[in-house]
Length: 437
Image (spheres, helix red, strand yellow):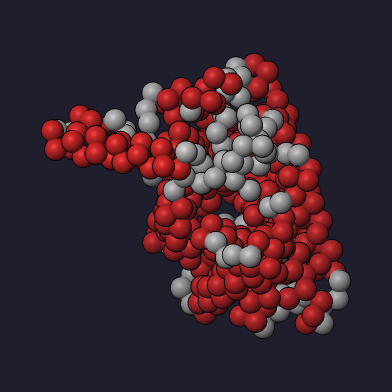
């Protein structure tokens, strides 16, 4: 479980590279920092009160925890178990989920957000949105004793979410949509080309995310055994199928399969299989992956038709992919994989499970969207969330961090040999430009 927690932690730097490669060169440091600061803020809040609110004994109605160990008092020298795990082990594993969920949202507002406003947003958002939703979805009755009461989605509704389709991806996707609407469009979007500045970064980030996702999904079995093996296998199958699904759509729609499409397809498959990894067999995972890859490839164009600027397709990949995986549990789940689950429609279970999955998805989506919109609006109207137009044009890296990722001027200051090489390069560019003219 500690190794799984470390793998999930690696997903946040992986996300930073995935997002960082997709923005323009003048915004890459800010994009990296938006993920990195989530590691700092959320880990502190998780120990102070986050874990208690998410995984403490329910204080009423299955809506919020904290009834038995507020303020992290359980960590002050006491011995406690969550199931068969030391509480500290389970706590640090779930901490990593909270961190990356907050970081995921940043892709929707790339290139135009103030860093300290984003930092404040993270702190408040995880408190009023993520911690309660995690309680609803992940906190089960009887975890630390017969009188222990958990969240309403996990226990009263009985919807299935193995590793975070609702609590992580639908939650972050809905929040990303709300913030994109609050902050508005980037200057020049969609007229100007805002192509990724570093596709190798994107593919590196996707690879790190895929690697770390095994801790996310297989680790959610909370034990080493057959169920963890199934989750590992279904994660691999779905992700590979989603890459193929996305690339096939690109081939027919655009005439070429792209590197960005392959990376995005992998993330779409990982997102979609997350809630289903421990409830479907490998064939079910293959179906989920293909459907998610194709639908998310089509969904990323919705923003152009509806006119909202979701910079890095958080809505098209995480919200749509999370919905695909959550709903398809209602069709493809089988209790032959996990006796704690239920049979979906295609395995003789009827429509009951599908209805539960749909209700959980809609409630989390609505809750996250409304509270995020209100929170973002308040921050924007008070301290200001959106960067100035000048900062956006010159680059968020310079305006927010007084740094730039790439110091091209060093070619001139790196010694006589380097300076001479730069002069030669400049003359060649000028000569070629003259010929083209």
